[in-house]
Length: 314
Image (cartoon, rainbow, N blue to C red; front, side, top):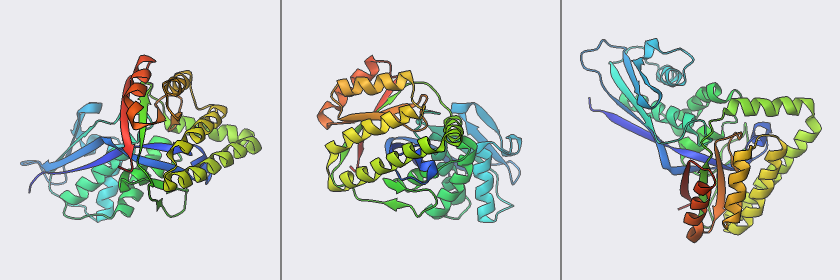
């Protein structure tokens, strides 16, 4: 039996983070420049029903049975085995690596889960549909995010731009004209579960104010979809700025994120905002392709630890 591999991209949320948890629309796109990779290979000489998990990035080299049941990796494997209806399988090694920064809003958890689910099912002779892969990854996302919206597992699984409303059918939509995004990483790891939980507490304490925030974010996402479909890319810039201001009011931005957002605008970005759970992680800037390097340099000079230039709809 040969070794098999599977990969899954990272992702960024363009519009609608946090409000998407409250049935408002959000737009997310894959980031193909970074990815998670899972490789399954026969573990010759080991007893059946043994999985050796090797994940150097997080210092794991142990059997599946010795991993905690609620560990994201073991959960992804167990859910896949249950979905396949397999209780007896040949021993195999599972090696996991990723170039996606952890806890940075780039979908690292969902990407790893999707890669694992796909490679395990393929190695055991079955191919799961994208819909099933996404649903299994969503279950694992509950470990990372507490009450996930479902957007990370969706965009990572389908590797297409998505317009997402929680508990509704996933929508993909056409990109009228490719556009360029510069991603700036603060280098600060931040738990999406914590920031989502804090927003929920704030919403419970003042529902009227926060529902106004969420509705405004939803309106921005709807407008953004229209502009993207029509190829009116520069019009996305002010919408990004408006969305960031709302996220600041929700107390999910940070000094470091705000500094990078302002630096990118000063360097010529058409608009910028945080992306993901906030409190750290990444921000994104909409730029003219010719100015992308200048904006990336400005971000590095202002404290970013890494930048990624990605093209949406290429």
